Image (cartoon, rainbow, N blue to C red):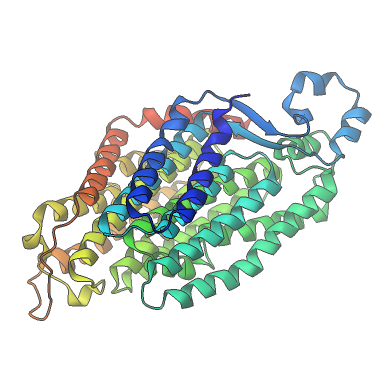
Length: 498
């Protein structure tokens, strides 16, 4: 077992706890946080693939050679015994996703620590804990362990909102907690039903039980478990009907916090979506439900974005809409579709972080997020304006930036699956996304500066510019060489359609 696999979760947790203890030692906090944050994206790059489990014994289904040689009554008996080990799987797809999550976490933490004279150990604690939780969600093959970290991720998101000290943030945090107090127990109930049916919370063993007749796939309790888990999935990722509260969460966080929060949503969406596909792929309507929800997210996201005057809410709704592209890829259920959906997830996490940090410079210079009160900022800092423009073009899928490649692959996958209508819808929504962004960009940067607008003389921190340049570089690299990511993601996609 590779010891670096659990370190991806343990290191940020240990750093978070230590930073919380050192909350008044500003210099120590800054040095420690940056060093650990820089280490987080490096670990998945150097770690070798494999499985790591804590306590108990390895899942029976992990060793197919043993399982296939055992009589059916033995495997049935073994699989109906509660599995005591927590299993982490690390493969090529996890390498890409944990790396991108770690990179965004590093840039968000790096930016936040350099935008304030007195860095908050509590704020950094929350960012590290959230990163650890979502990393665990991506790695775990234990659905109850996923639930535990799902709850930790939700709590840290609430904490980041509260620690941001934005106007009306407490109200938004309370609403998100109240909704979570309903959605999370329903997710847990779905997991409990799976445990009752299969005797295991290990995802691989659950799938083995279903495929080998240990559990009747047509059992109505199994259908109920699917519905409950899907409901928790909608809450965790911000899909309808939770799109409005998720957008509010982004708008009530500081820009670097919002950049990380949306990465949490994207990768939670992917992790739970893959689990739903793995466990419930035999249900004829499962993929249809994913596609319908995704289309609804795309349409509602862009519609709500068009109605907003606060640029943070605009980006928040655009981010929700972009999740729909990922869902369509997963819902198509083909190797090309799933690969394109996973690639789109990586691109969305990068681009939306780019947008939040970029538009955060507007907030840094003016303390205003209402587009009706802004203008003339291109004259103030044309280089930053150019970077923000490139981020918006990337989100709209303009070549040669990265989202162009993933959206093109999604359109090709839709056509190959005999659903060209989905491709047309994605093209239309990409055009409207471009128009929505350009409207906001023109209002903020290009139109004449309002007389009453006050722009402070503070220089934008170099850390913010560096973070934007790093994200732009990743957008260009993945746009020109998409195979860097798709070759690794295709391994997981192929396994899901076998």
